[in-house]
Image (cartoon, rainbow, N blue to C red):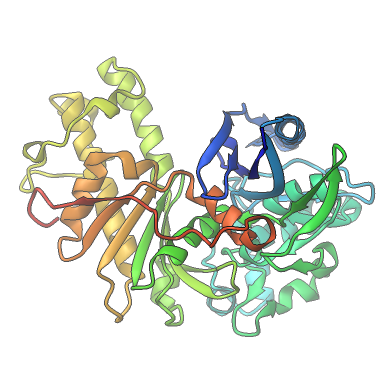
Length: 446
């Protein structure tokens, strides 16, 4: 039997780590998924275990290359952003994979912005609100001034997608979707590293920038494989939609973070937008994409644990809750987070109120990146696209627009495959087989 040509994609989220094989029609023909227990960094703060992650990637590559029914032509990677892996001259990790949720020292933050012209000036230039460790460039500044010995041992600092690629290729590289996601590193006006990065000697720690669609040919298990540089997962998730739709749209990519993308909004970020948390992402084609972010997936998960405990339900009991507009009384609605759980008559009522609060936040965040150019459709992918309560409430919140749940499974992984399509796939670039579910509002506008 002739082996099926495939591309292997490692898709590394904050919660779930997965790898897939896609055929030339971008159908999943093989997959694996795992969750890791977090470890502690050298300050005792929770973080991903870079050693376990490395073992898992290496073991996974061995597994897929030994599958006789597939011809693995290429490898690529998508992973969460705002996370650096630092390596020494031998290619070994230096220090832990610090968590972007780790609190940033206020004294150091104040020193940085005072030195480089103030929060507004730096934020506007780098399209990065002041986010502490979520601005990954600030992690390098922090290491320089608080862990000088560790900083001195670093030869290269790579964002997580590029580090995973490095494990296969041995090639240290930077890549623009990772550099351009609220890192504080990239000057969007000059289209180069910001002046502070050069002044602090950080550029010496950042490897050369490779094009997002470039591959490196390597021999693995006596097989030649073309390996991409890896992409930031949120930027990667946008690629299939750009391929499939030319009319203006907004994509809400949902997961731990829920990120609204408007690739058709080319207006500069305003001071107000920056203060509200809007950012620019850089797409794999090098073009900026205006976006807003919410930590809704994390908020949802934290609330589910409390609901399960209070109502003596399983963690995933929400999956059996059907949408009931009567459980949301506009005249008595109040914040879920400010109410005692015993004030709710049932799990279903409490869950509806939770989702109402999440959608109120989502409406505000998504509205921020709508431009004067008419956007008529909103696509939702990721976990919340399968949540009918989320989708119904979102449809009510944007009743003047068409709201769709997208059936694209694993959009960030598919995007990483599509980014290097020309190097492995002999078929035309797929872009029109996406299945969409339209949600008609069943209640009054939110």
